[in-house]
Structure formats: structure tokens, C-alpha cells
Image (cartoon, rainbow, N blue to C red; front, side):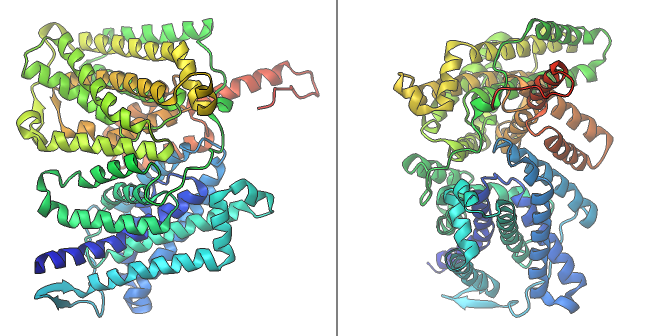
Length: 627
């Protein structure tokens, strides 16, 4: 009993640290609608800068002054990021800011290694809190007790700021109706900057306060960001009080999960999130999300099949790709095969994001299920290559059908986070069901048969399946079902009034997208000769999102271009420099600013404008329909 009490107190201390970071993310999203993937990077920067200030400037600032100064310094950096980068793309689709903040995360990760080195850094213990306190016969670090008291104190401070100051009133008003706040003459730009800086300050303070408890490393941003998203979604987007209660729940589950439920300890938090979202679609204290800044149907120009010239260009590109084995070696063909596979994976995600208007943060689940389905069919059932591919597609589609049935009951970020929860559940099963999946050791020896083992032959197979898959996805987009899917995306109420049910249409699209992702996963298993739980992991889902957003979420096939650019650049940079994340992150940020609707999306908007200017008489401006 005494040990359980100490575990409970440990969970409370972790909850305070988690709440600091989660409350900042909740405040930022509530006002700006930015899905700030870089929030974990600011948390990490807070810890690193606090380490430098407390080790090198402890005489001038003191330990506690160093922690506060670190949080303030990172808040200034966050404000600069908002002014220089995010302010330029507020009119872009809301999810596009996810791509920008992902690029910032990559930059910060490599900069941290350059400045502080790759080794973990251990900070000094907090002055005055270096001893332990005996509670019920068990020793509890006094610093944990400080953190336990700090959580409610920060919650009360945030409440006073939002309910007793003019700034807080404007923030709460912007959360409810930003357009009305702008109509009243409030400068939204500086309001957004202030909110973003406040959220970043809380994240950095949370990281700085971890200095006496944990080593500082360049991977701590990814460790915290998933838990923070879980906390914010369980509590309800924009609800600081909900974030505090959710942080308590998540931290206590982490503290006791390994003791009470060791077999599912890795995924218990995501199980709870899934249950909460199924029962309460907007979290414990959340409210329905406001309308997006722009509707997809007003942005996608044009929605039409390829013109004859475009068809010829695509045919030439496919022919050139098909002739590559005649001049390229095995390594180039292997890279090309991998690009075709990830292009098909990204195109499957594009179907539900572009035509369906729903974003999945866990699309890798179906890629991984396809890989495991093909591998198990080949090893355990000794099925031939085509039958194993079909088995992988069937398993991925079945997983999408089960998970999608629950997910389509939600929308927006809640939908995305439920897909993430189910993906983590699938990952946990693959990781812990060692008798079937091999666990962390994976399944090995998944090679194509002799007739397909030649690199050129396998390359052609991958090219053919990718062309077939992308063409089929485009055909679905322009089919009657595709128009129904887009109708549901644009206005669910109007679609339902003419007999088009939102859930049924979106669920069908979800299953179809999962089947194509599974096909890509099955081919990937044969390409690498192995399958691991990482094939279902969050990083692969993030890569899929980046490919779609990089190509243009408002396009039909932009994901193919995004996949080619992103994957090829990643492979080249990893082989050429030790700072591939830094270069790739800067490249992504540059593209975000230069092509605010993705590569293909921006080019689609540019060509009609150039044609209009060329056709306009000298001295006149070409007239275009109102957008």
C-alpha cells in the first residue's frame, strides 16, 4: 500500500510537467487552430537552454532564474517563428501549418545536436530540493512534491489570466469567434503572436523543470509530443482545465499501467483516448471545432481529369521510369522501387484527405498490416507471391474497416487523433504478440520468388502496381462515389438532405484507402525482406502526412509529387551529410513559404493566373471569377 501511494505521488509530479506542455498546446490550438507539431521541439529547447544557463551562468542568474530565463528565451524564439513563418501561411489550409511546424522540428533536432552534442546531458539538482521526504515509510523526492504543488498553481494563474485580464478576454473571444474579434478592431496578428509565445513559454518551462529529474537529449521532443496530443484531445481542444485532468489521468496510467496491466502498458493511454473519443466525441470538456478558415471546394482548382497534354506528359514520365533499369544499377533500382511504394502509400492517404476532407494521423497502421499480412501468408501459409500480396491487402482493408467504423463518427483533429490511437494499438499488438509477429525482432526472410527477385523485374512490378493504384484512386475521385465523397466533405448537412450519408461514404473511402496502403506495405515487406513493428509506427504516418501536404492537399495527385520529392531528398541527404534533418527541415520550410498550397497546388493556381495575364490587353488586368 505504501508503495502504491508513492507511485501515485510520482504520477502527480509527472502530471504537472505534462500539464505545462499540454496547456500551451491547447491554448495555441484554441485560438490559432495551429496543430503545432513543433511544440515538443520548444519543450526540448527549454531543457537544453536551461542546462546551459544553470551550468555556465548560475552565478548571475541562479538555478531558478536560469529556468525562467530559458523559458522566456524560447518564448521569444517561438514568437519569431510565428511572425516570420506561420503568419505568412495563416490563409493556407489549416493542416498545412502542420507541415511548417514539422520542418521546424527537424531543424531544431539537428541544431540541438550541433550546439549541445549527441550525448545526453545531466543537469544539477534543484537547490533546496535535493533531499527526500519520508511518506508512509517510503522516500519521495522533495522536488516531486514541488512539481505536484506547481501544477494547480499554474492552472490557477492561467485561469486568472484568461478571466481577469483584457488579454484573456480577447483570447477567449477569439477561441469562440475570431471573425467577430477582428470586426471589433482587434489586431489578430499580435493577439496570435502573444498566444503562441505564451504557449511556447509554458512548453519550454515544462522542459526546463525536467532538468533535475531527467537527462536532456535530442530525442525528448518526440517522446513528449505524442503524449501531449493525447492529453489535449482527451481533455478537449482549447480546454485548459480539461488538459489538467487529462494530464492527471495519463500520468497515473503511466505510473500504474506497468504494475496492473503489464501486457498492455504500452498502449493503455491510447485505449483510454479511444474510449473517451467514442463516448465523448469532443473530449471530456471540449466543444465542437469552429469552421475552417477555407473550404476545400473553394480551394481545389480545377477538379478535372487530366487534359490530353497532361496525359501525354504522364505517359512520357511513366515510360521514362520503365526504361530506367536499362541504364541504372541495383541500388538506383532499389531506391526507385521504394519511391514507387511510398508514392502509392501517400496517394492512398490523399484520397481521404483531399476528396474526403479527413486527415489520418495513423495511416501507417494499414501499411503495416499489409506488410504483416503478406509476410505471414508467405511464411506460415506458404502462399505464392501474388496470393501473399492479396492476403496483405485483405488484412489491411479489414483493419481499416474495423478502425474506420469508429473513426468516421468524429471529425477534424478528433478524427485524426482517434486514427492515431488505433494505429498505436495495432503497433502494440505487433510489438508484444511475439509468437506470431516476432515482436521487436520482426519477421525475416520475406523475399520474392526467383522470377521476381531480379531488381529490374521487382522494380517493374512496383512501378506497375503504383501506376495502377494511383490511376484507380484518380478514377475513384472522379467517379459518382468520388463526387458523393466530396459533397459530404463540403457540406454534410446538404449531402444528407439528398440522401448521401456522411458516415457510410467516408467509411467506404477509409477502407479503400486502407486497402491501397496495405498493398504498398505488402510490396515493402518483399522489398526489404522483413517486417518490423516500426512499419505501423507514428513516424511513418507523419511521413505520409508530409508527402501529401508537400505535394498539395488540395490536389488530386499531389501526393505522388510530394512522395517523390520528400523520399528522394531524404535518401540523398542521409547519404551525403550528417545533418540531413537540418537541410530537409529548411527545405520544407522554404517550400511552405514559396508554395503555400503545396508544390502541385501552387502550380495549379499559378498557371491560370499566368494565362489570364497573357491574354489580357496591354494596360488592363485580366478578370477572373470571384474565388
